[in-house]
Structures are given as C-alpha cells and as structure tokens.
Image (cartoon, rainbow, N blue to C red; front, side, top):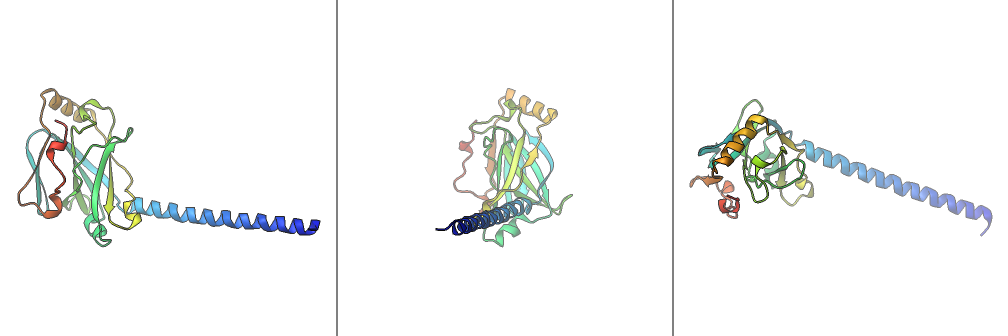
Length: 209
C-alpha cells in the first residue's frame, strides 16, 4: 500500500469513528430526552403531610382504608394518573423511600385519588411509620415519593422525579411521642373497596410492629 493510500485509509477510519461517535451521541441524547419526559409527565408536587395517630378512614373513589400510625402525604398534579397509565394499559403505583439512604418504606402501593383540590387532581400517599428496615421516629432523613406505572412499555417503568416529604420538627415530635407510647401501625381495607385497591399480596402483618 502506498503512503497516499495509507493516509486515505486512515482518514476514512477517522471519519467512520466520528460518524459512530455522532450516532451514539444522538442515541444517548434521544434516551436522555425520553427519560426526562418520562420523569416530567407526572407533574407531581407535595401539597401537605400529616401524621395519623388514631384510626382514620381515607377514602378515594370507591376505595376506603382505615389507617393508624401512618403518614398521609397529599400530592397534587395537573395529570390524572389513572387515565394516563390506563391509556397505556398500565396502572399507577407509588414508591416511598428515605431520601438519602434509599431504604424502602413499604408505602401502600396505590396513590389514593382524592378528587380536586388546589391542583386539578390530588392523591393521598399512605406511608407507615414503621416498616421492616425503617422507623421514621428514629431517622433524620426526609421521605421521597416516586410514581411509576406498571405495564409492558419499557418507558412506563421510568419513575417520576422525587417528591420530597420533609419531616419537620413538629411532625418528628408527633412520631417520637407515638413511638414512646408504642402506638400500633395498622391498615385495614374496607370490605367494599374497589378491586384494584384490594391487593391480594398485601398483609398488615408484613409491617414491623
């Protein structure tokens, strides 16, 4: 091979690798855009949080659950989670964890639709004070909520951005007082609740007492 031919071949390889690199960058850009859209499509924001230290019924549509020893975080959105995921043959679920360590809090999986409020749609998220690995009365971390859709579409499994539930001093004081009197952590389904809220694999016994 002559020197000119070698130079030409080298230049061809350089352009080939540049083309591959540009293609990879374009693909990564497309993936990043899709992930960002998947995160943002929920438009979820925190409206408030309270701690329930006595039996209280939380209603949403045809569902009714009585809880005690639970945080109830109210999340607002301009998106109907159930309609959005239903159009994709999916179903909305919520994941709760400690923001820093990522430890699971075993929240009730279904965001409970409360109807309208300051936002077009509002949902209650039920988070137990104690789970197998975590006792909220003994942690300094805040709670992070993420929403995700079940289904076969790969992008449906991309969770929302974290909705941070800050555990302010007064809320921590309530948790501490409840823990000191060994208050129970209970969730009881109303017998007439809608089928999608009656999860057959859920048992209150799975929560650490």
